[in-house]
Length: 97
Image 1 (cartoon, helix red, strand yellow):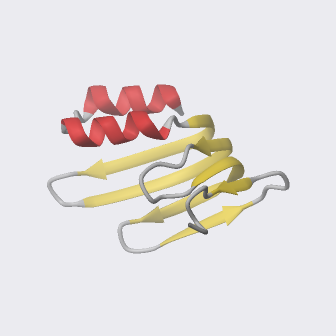
Image 2: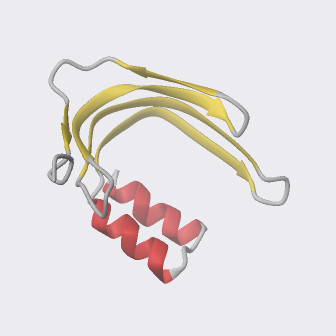
């Protein structure tokens, strides 16, 4: 996932604040048979694939996740997210404060 965030920056450079947020997320994990299609002019997007060991550190008020595995399929109109994991966890240090 870390490599994917670098590739995205190459093809679709993000503004500094979004690039900084993406770096703070410290994405980790693997993508399998994953495809992402975007038409920025038409404002359409489609995604399909599997992911495993997905981890994102908590930042701002957004909780993190660790070791998430599943499958995603969808477009800008609708989608399905199937989780198939036994040892995932949500990291929410500020949840009860």
